[in-house]
Length: 351
Image (cartoon, rainbow, N blue to C red; front, side):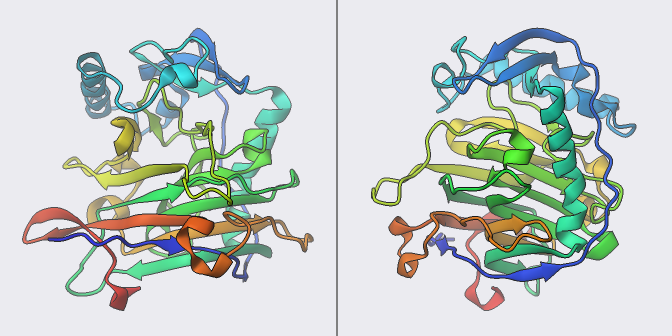
């Protein structure tokens, strides 16, 4: 099947959502094999991949998951790192040793802020806060029964955001259900000073199995997402971002796909790098039935009581011209066609 190039440009839209909260976060004492530093001055502990904090989840200590991790370690030993240049990000020029994964070391205040950011996820979806989203939403309908993956090239920008809890993101949602029955994975890039302790553009993920009522968080701030890459952390700070006035844009290709074991994996295909995975044990409907809704676009968040929202993407829409604004391109979702998984572009009639 021929794949056409689907591009999304986004600016500001405004919507209001409702408020409350109970997401569990945690911090575990972890033993670092070594500590390494990024070009930005951030420190990461290289933790035994089998002893990373997320595996404290009661459902995630199974032999099945240990086998998946073992297979990934074998792949790392056999394959060279693809397009990722470790020497441009890590001061030791190589990242963590094989058998370990990078977990960011935070000072007490940073950790408190990051925890608060995860606790705020419930408020964002169900609170009296400003969520501005611009993009496309696609719901499964015949002949498409479900979505089994998503991917897109995301143009990288660094919009201005203040440190009071606001953020700006380019995001892909992958979900099943609604309200307390919402099961969702979200990936993209984000500028979130409270979460990351800086104004840089970071890779990020969130997940929940119950609409953020009692499960879910950002990245690895609670048991759930298993880090697999030894060189690209799930909160990776992109070294370069795009400038509005230049035609050449910095991009990242992100893909989430479901394996034959019903786990969901996050990969950077251009880098040939498996970032990590959400085991099927975290979910019910999302694991068994896939997603019924996928969304691609830009999002900004403003806490209640604030009336000036941060910039989205490049900050200006500029007539929807892709190379003068923030965009996503080669937008694809994964479905089953005649029993085979295929990546296809959105059907305009279903958007």
